[in-house]
Amino acid sequence: MKTLDYIWRLFGSAFCYAVFGIMGLVMGLLLFPMLFVLYSDSGERKNAARGLIGRAFRGFVWLMKTVGVMDYRIEGAEHIACRPNQLIVANHPTLIDVVILISLFPQANCVIKSAVTRNIFMRNTVAAADYISNDEPDALLESCIRYIESGGSLMLFPEGTRTRQGAPLVFEPGAAAVATRSGAEILPVAIRCEPVFLTRQMAWHYVPPSKPEFTIRVMPPVSVDELVMTNDTERQTRLNLNDELLKIIGQSIDTMAV
Image 1 (cartoon, rainbow, N blue to C red):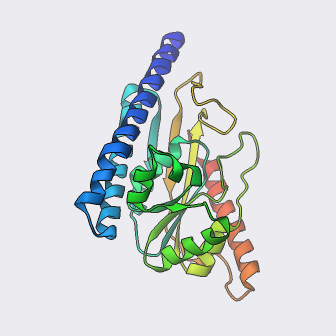
Image 2: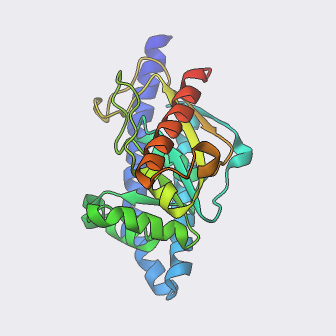
């Protein structure tokens, strides 16, 4: 039975990845260019594009669960909402958790690698959704702060890349700096996947021996001054906040029942 289950998930994974690739091509080359014709207002175009991406990702997550490639559960669903001046902070164990989070927070902005913005199949999607590019690292922090201060909701992964399997969780202070300087409400999200797949060290076509199960825990929103003393220097506040976010998310991951 284990062999049959593995074979089923092997072919199911190939099918799902093919669907995702075709979906990306159709949306990037046909649907999103049409949004520039249908919506002259950039704000309306952005909302429409993010809504389409959210529905597409929600459909893809449903497909993977229905086919039996993976399973997932959401804890703290009552906290799921894109609120003004909000910073969503999450760990980043696999590629799929990005898809899950965007399906849950479709109107949230996120940081996209500069290579994606230059990809002929993806650039229309990114442009229509008005995601933030990291092509100018020196200006990235200010772009994130300005977006939140303008009333937006932003999603950041403080690790900067996917979690290194077997290594302790480490957060870079960038997300803490954005929260400190923008005064954002922070929404911590802890993600656990067992067994892991689509990590930095694994090939995209790797299929684990048993079905991966995601737990997405959305915790109550908190303000910066609820977590740290804000009468320290800006640098110390940022470092203290980074430590607190790491503790909150790290401890939550450790306590998750899989």
